[in-house]
Length: 225
Image (cartoon, rainbow, N blue to C red; front, side, top):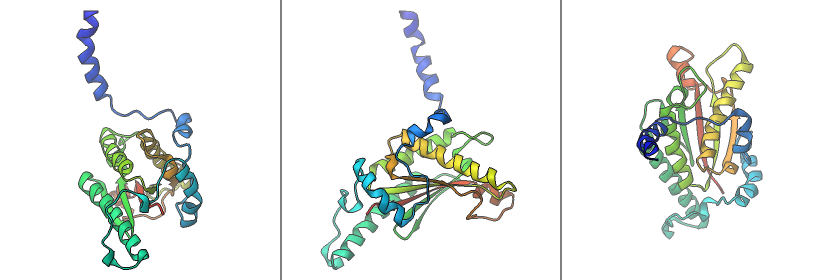
């Protein structure tokens, strides 16, 4: 018995250093059960809301957030101010937590967009979440779980590629890998919209540096209303 106890600390160290390993691709559907594989349009969110609420989700105005003072105006104005405050809190926590190269947090109206350059979260020469990506996505998971009155679009993008089919497949793979990770770490999959957009919507020039920026996953976080 003692000889096994002697090797236990070594085993624990090796386990801690092993890092994240994605589940087999043929099991991804299990982890993404309830997710939508489409663009997160206004209509899609409305259709998704009953499923989201049935799976334990909540609307942003029902979330535990400090009320905005009444002097903001009528109910519509107060509700809008509360939503803005909720989303600003999410933006600030993500910004303070994700200060790493290749990652940016932006605001688009009431939405919060997190841009994850591929090489900042995945292995350079392999389709796998890297150790750095594990740390980053774990932090994002915790914030998404804390502020769960939101929908999340997970969109993959590539740089310009001659083979548009390959670009579509690669962008879809990146988006699903991130979604599977989030699902494994407690993020309610009924909040998720997962889509691969290939080389669409480049954010940089298609030169050597720009290509690295265009290969990315974007998380668009939207208040659930």
